[in-house]
Length: 141
Image (cartoon, rainbow, N blue to C red; front, side, top):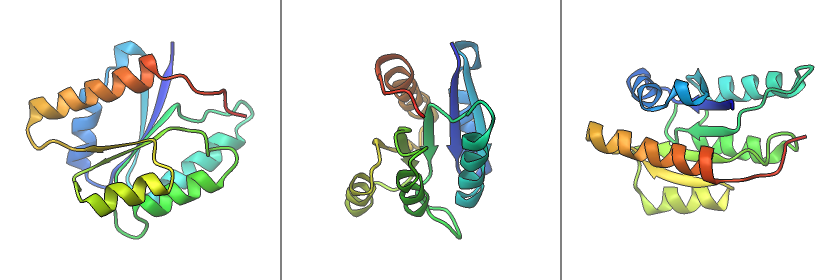
């Protein structure tokens, strides 16, 4: 089974770590983009493809230049074609106001990136297990 994931992170090191923590053998196909605008452009193209190829999960960084994760989340939730895609905020911010604001705007989850490598891989394993194995959501479109 195929599990397309969109990873939105402006930090190449964090994106590389996240890719290493995901499991391509389990069918996870990860598209990485480095900005909020790239993410929205990608989703528009995927939505308009002859056979829509929208991701099953979006991992979204909160703190990015030009367009932050909350603005991207707002745009995803405002679009009828993408509003049901689970969006997990994957960020270094553990600030209560960021957590509350993310959920208020429709985040499906909020994960603070652990600084220790083993804990980061453990957190990603938890995300994978819940969103790719246990969670069920309606078909898009």
